[in-house]
Length: 142
Image 1 (cartoon, rainbow, N blue to C red):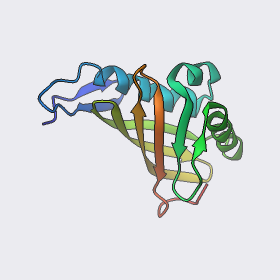
Image 2 (image 1 turned 135 degrees about the vertical axis):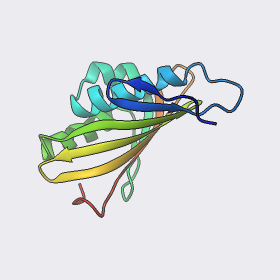
Image 3 (image 1 turned 135 degrees about the horizontal axis):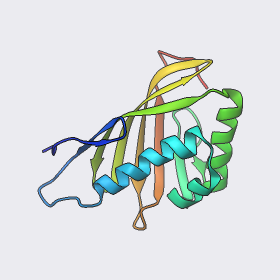
Image 4 (image 1 turned 30 degrees about the vertical axis):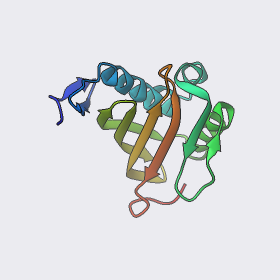
C-alpha cells in the first residue's frame, strides 16, 4: 500500500509500505533528491562524495556501466559540458526500502524530456547503484 504522500520542496514523495514500516525511506528520498539537484545539476563534488559510494555503478541504456565515483562524476561533468544548461527537476519520487525511483523533467538546449532514475542505497545510506533512462523518443540521444 502507498502511504499518504509527503512533500520535499516541489516534488511528491510516495512511500511504499509493505506493512513492516520503512522509517528511512523518507530520509533516502531526500538524499536522492540531493543527488539530482546538487550532484547532477550543480556538479558539486563534495556532495557527490557525501552521497555516492566509492564503487557506485551508473547504468545508462545503450552504454557500458559507469563504475566508480570518479568515473560517475566525470560522466556527469561531460554531460554538463555538452549541454551547459542541462537541468533536471524531480517531479515525483517513490520510496520502497533502500530503493528510490524518481520521475524527472530533464531540460537543456538539445533536450526536453522525461527521465526516470532509480537509485539503490547501501547500508550507510550511500547510493551504490543508479539507473537512469531518458525518453529517447522525445529527445535526441546524449
